[in-house]
Image (cartoon, rainbow, N blue to C red; front, side, top):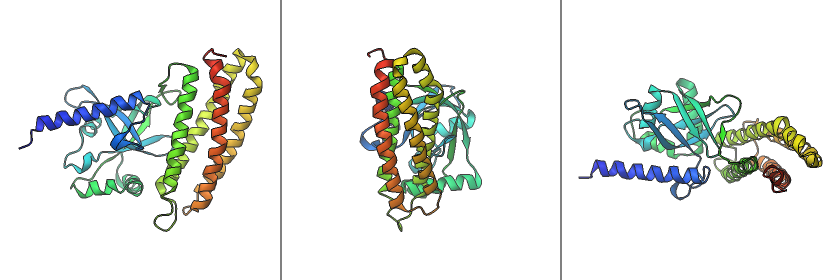
Length: 292
């Protein structure tokens, strides 16, 4: 007969390995979860009051929230983290790039069903989990409750902060391009989750560039007047990229966007953004980190 304590210990050890790798590599992990969208969710134990951190998969859901699913692999019992947040909905989220406080809201009714349908369309594994259990698998929205920004960035300097934010956008673009390969399945129309992923990326990029225009660039220009020409070029590139983003939004607004058209727009945006990110890093990181 299997030793339940040994099984529990093995599971905890596995989770801790994922947590350690996630934190060491700012959200990137290998092995079974390589390429997956993961976050670290810290909840307060309903009975013990002890803080517990768990790696969970998430779904982008616009700029205001992300969704997590309490599947527990199709277990007949809800996962511990779900029972914890029912008792205390204030949680901590680590995205790899940012750490922030969030409010957990369990979705119900039609809202839950729509979110679940997007999840299943993106990954049929969720449906397989539901078939294994009689319980209705919960979908939970996590709303960032941090005041004044996306949270604490996991970087030790302003220059490093620029690089890790940029690398996050590069990874998102790579994921979107991978997901584009799925667009030809099932009749050649774009999946709902792919549209959400693209629009989430676009919203994040808009917020980042707005923050740079309003805060970072004035800060750098005030302390390093020699960067004026570079900053002027970066501002112009922000405007150009914003136009490309709006064009992508327009195309994705159609329920049956043409995959070839979307793919062309994604590639146009990718080329412009990668060149912009490379230029900004070359011009501003040495100045911000004092190596210029």
